[in-house]
Structure formats: structure tokens, C-alpha cells
Amino acid sequence: MMRSLLPLGAVLLGATAVLAAPPSCSLTQKCPEDSPCCSQYGQCGVGAYCLGGCDPRMSFGLDSCVPAPVCESKTYSMANTDGFMSINDYLGDPKTADWVYQGEVANYTDGVILTMPAHSVGTVAASTTYMWYGNVKAKLRTSRGAGVVTAFILFGDVKDEIDYEFVGTELDVAQTNYYFQGIPNYDNSANISLSNTYANFHEYEIQWTPDEIRWLVDGQLGRTKKRSETWNATANQWAFPQTPSRVQLSIWPAGADTNAKGTIDWAGGPIDWDSQDIKDYGYYFATFGEITIECYNAKSGPGTNNGVSYYFNDASATNNTVIDSKKPTVLKSFQGSGTDMDAGAPSGTAVPTADTVPGGTGQAPGQVPGGGTTSSDTSSSGSSSSGGSSSGDGSSSGSTSGCDASSFTQSNCGGSSSSSTNKSDGVRGAERMLGASAVAVVIGFAGLLLL
Ligand SMILES: *[C@@H]1O[C@H](CO)[C@@H](O)[C@H](O)[C@H]1NC(C)=O
Ligand SMILES: *[C@@H]1O[C@H](CO)[C@@H](O)[C@H](O)[C@H]1NC(C)=O
Ligand SMILES: *[C@@H]1O[C@H](CO)[C@@H](O)[C@H](O)[C@H]1NC(C)=O
Ligand SMILES: *[C@@H]1O[C@H](CO)[C@@H](O)[C@H](O)[C@H]1NC(C)=O
Ligand SMILES: *[C@@H]1O[C@H](CO)[C@@H](O)[C@H](O)[C@H]1NC(C)=O
Image (cartoon, rainbow, N blue to C red; front, side, top):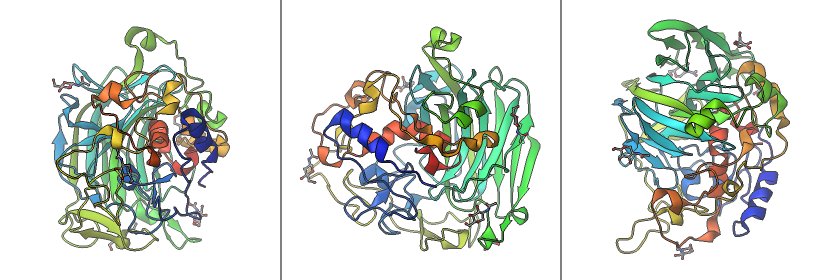
């Protein structure tokens, strides 16, 4: 299901010239040794590619990805954006940030908002720790409008996924869904009815154990899915989410015209980049209030969090192949990977800055408002539609991520400034560009999305 990323790579390349086209990766095409990590979006690289979202099954080796920080029970007030760090600045230490993001986040009176300026790909934020079973709840207000999707999901590096998704034309419905290892299945979606999700904060909760998933809205049980209902006789296993997952919050343009028709239809139609919200605020936005993660806290076996990090010891990536270990999670620089975590260590006291992030400065796509880009064939599945899952393509691409839709350079936004830039590893631009959409979209098949 992973679609080829070549078109995208080509786009990037053309746009930035300095970046080498990142190799793409899938279950059948693992990354090469010199760019060993397969990112969430199906592209090979080092540094950030080896952190959150790195899929060990598609990477050069199972140990190419950096081990994932274990679950931490914690309440995030979302009083402001202080716990948020750009993915271009994060090296894997969850003590330095609660959330990493791509796109734009902002303070609001009653929460943190994730924004989607006109013609951007929106914003995605992911927790820096991984939950391996447990409960997570978020108070949020969705965005609104045709083609605008807000999401609150659990997403694992091997693409196990549990979702709440909100379509901007259906403000009285929370769509729920789940996926096992990213395998598309359009029959797993179910709806929960509620009052206006744009006007009101509701509390959305996912209770996840080895035996069942429960979705609760405002404390009321809305849906239950038991593992026992998910046996796949062909694969001879449970098609049930079972591996450590990050909490992901996002807003993304499912109705962008670069997306597959099925995705656009599912999202309520083409997005209006000249809507009232765009006129009034300069962007579509979703508001996130308090979020609480409660770890499952198993004493042994699946669902523990007594070590430092999780990694997989087998490519089957089922819950008995997750090791709760003492391995470190922090890279010394953006040149590192799971097998060489000290690579590129700055000598002296220099601290890596955004510009040392591979590709960090070359956000090509961003330079084109509207993004253009996009890749081709999404087709993939448009299907999703029904499922809510979207699929597809999120590739959209565009931009946003920087501080404003038309400029993507790091320095403009983050403050960091330097100029070094090591072009050699460029890949990250691509990731960033896909980011929001992909992740969000992810929604289901991360792979497809990607184009
Ligand atoms: C939000 O407010 C906090 C606290 O005042 C501040 O540190 C942070 O920079 C603000 N975030 C943005 C994106 O302006
Ligand atoms: C969920 O609601 C949406 C819109 O209200 C609808 O299009 C979709 O078919 C519903 N899904 C299910 C599984 O009932
Ligand atoms: C069952 O597993 C097979 C093999 O992995 C897969 O192709 C198929 O899509 C799965 N069926 C469902 C309903 O998930
Ligand atoms: C996860 O592990 C537990 C305990 O070993 C087991 O009972 C359960 O079936 C596993 N869950 C899945 C979905 O494989
Ligand atoms: C760029 O990469 C090379 C080779 O890895 C390294 O020697 C050099 O210090 C890097 N430059 C910067 C600015 O990071």
C-alpha cells in the first residue's frame, strides 16, 4: 500500500535544487544503509526521520529507528504553546518538549490552536512520549467548513491507529475508527452523535486495553471494539491496534483539490480558502484544551512503561515483540540514527539548531502558497471516504509550516537563525511538507497518503 514517493521527491528536488531526492520506503522496499530510517511518510533519511514515526519494518534494520520514549502519565493544560517544539528542533528527549509539531500553533484564550492558513497543509502535533495501552482524553473544539478535517488520534510507528476525526460539514458527528498496522479497511468506522463540535468543547476519550477499545464523549460510552471481534484468519492474527502510539492532534485540508476525489467527498467537498474563518482569522483552526494521558501501567508483558524506551525485536510488530528497555532516546545531532546516535555530535558546546536539521531550511513547497505540489497519484484510495479515513493523500502539500504560508524558512519563524545548513541530508523538507497532511491523514493509511 505504500505508494511511491518519487513524484514528490521530484517536486521537492525541482523546487530546491539542493536537496537530494529522498529514497522512498515501504514494507517491500527498505531504506538503504546510508539513510536508514523510514519516516512516517515513507521517505528515508537520518535525524528526525529516525525519531517519532520511524517505521522499523521499512527501515534498513529493526534498530535503525531511535527507541521511543515510554509512556508517562501526565495532564497537559494547553494553557499556552510552551510545551510545543518544532520537529526541526527536536532530538528525541521528551524532557525538552511535550509535543512536536509541523505547521503553526498559537495561543488562544482557552487553549492552544492548531492553524491552517489558506492553501496550507495545516498543522499536526504529536506527543513526545508513546502510550502503550491506557487512556487518553482531550478537550477540543473542531474547525468547520467543507473539506476541513480535525483529528485526535493515537498513531503508532508501525501504523496501528485509533481515531477521532471530525469533518467540518458535520459538526454533530464524531467519526471513530481504528487500523491495525495501517492496513486499509473501510468497515471499521462508526459515528458518535453530539452537539456542535465547533461551538463547544467536548471531552473525547480513548480507553485502550489489550482486549478492547472504548471511545467516550463527555464521559458517555459511544463505542466499544473488542479484540475478539478482529481476528483475521488470512493473516492468522488479531487486526487490533496493540503497539506504542503517539497522541496526534491535527487539522488538515482533506478537501484540497490535490486530494483524491473520495477523500474530498468524504470531507464534505472542496475546501473554501476564502471562507469566513479565513477572512476573520487568517486561518482555519482547531482549539485544544486540557489533554490527559494515563498509562496502562502493566506490571509485566504488554503495556508496561517501567523502562526508558520501547523498541521492536521482530518485524511482525505485534504486542509481544515490543521491548520496554533502558535504551536511550536522544540523538546528538540530526545526523544520527538508531545505530549511530552520536553521529554528528557537535564539538564543544554548540547546540544543534534548526538549520542543521537536514533539509530544514529548504522548505520548498512552502514557498509556493497553495502548495502546489502534490503529488500525483493519490488515488489510492479514495475510498476512504466512507471510512473516514481518508486516505489519501494527504499529500497535498503545501505548506504552511512555516510561519506564514508563503515562507517556510526556519529562520523566519523559529527564531533560530543560523545559517549553516548542511545540505547533504536534505530530506526533511519533504517530511515537513507532508507532515500535516500525512499525519493527519494518516488516518489510516499512512502509506497511501503519501501519495
Ligand atoms: C504563547 O504564550 C507563551 C506564554 O506567554 C509564550 O511563551 C509563547 O511564546 C506563546 N506562543 C506563541 C506561538 O506566541
Ligand atoms: C458517519 O456520518 C457521516 C456524516 O454524517 C456519514 O457520511 C457516514 O456514512 C457515517 N458513517 C457511518 C459508519 O455511519
Ligand atoms: C487480513 O490480512 C490480510 C493479510 O495481511 C490482508 O491482506 C487483509 O486485508 C486482512 N483483512 C482485513 C479484513 O483486514
Ligand atoms: C497482547 O498481549 C496480550 C498478553 O500477552 C495478549 O493476551 C493479547 O492477545 C495481545 N493482543 C493482541 C492484540 O495481540
Ligand atoms: C555537514 O555534514 C558534514 C558531513 O557529515 C559534516 O562534516 C559537517 O560538519 C556538516 N556541516 C554542518 C554545518 O553541519
